[in-house]
Image (cartoon, rainbow over the protein chains, first blue to last red):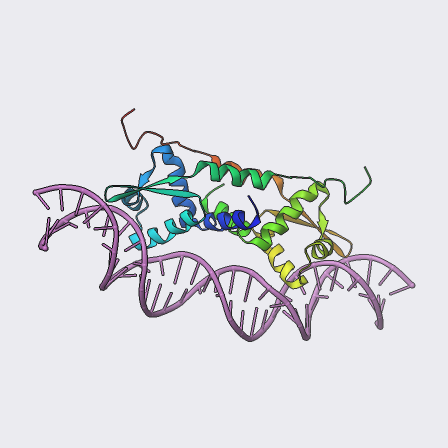
Length: 102
Length: 102
DNA sequence: AGGCTATTTCGATGTTCATGGAAATAGGCA
DNA sequence: TGCCTATTTCCATGAACATCGAAATAGCCT
């Protein structure tokens, strides 16, 4: 994990539509959800959904898997955990070093 | 915590410059860091830094405190924890409900 | 092959963002 | 008050983004 990857993932999640989409997939669990199912659930145009999904996939937060004519989308839990770890990582690592009074 | 706030915070972190900036403050710990100190450390123009800092403050991720002519910046740890919680929250809440075979 | 459904790509439009120099402001000190 | 340092606001520019309809593509089934 590094700044480039982390910021790309955070940017991908930093849009209300995509965050809603991502959380829908996170809630769905390991079984995932077909694109069409997500579209109905979130009631958005297919092209818009596809666009956002592509960004989440490019960021490594979502994986897609073909099942016939449908595409099943899964949240990539390991990626999410790595990102969460990166954010809390090194918290306060320099604690005190800028004050020197304790 | 809700989608609006969370996505705004994630968007704020979703830029390499701001993420670096934020992590610098997170590492600094409770003592915080003056704007000028951050500027020297990250070697960026003051106006650019101020712009990014403003976004982090607006998102509620950073708090600023005057100390004479300097402004001390602190990472808002509770906000960070709330955001991390929101992301992992409800993970797999619907697990199995879309398949019905177990 | 032909048709059907699921999904993506293309293209256009308006919006927001990132950057940084120059000028303005805030606070402290003599 | 006048000066000095710290920081922000203003402004302009180029780049990236969000949205969505229409057309294209992918994969199945008969």
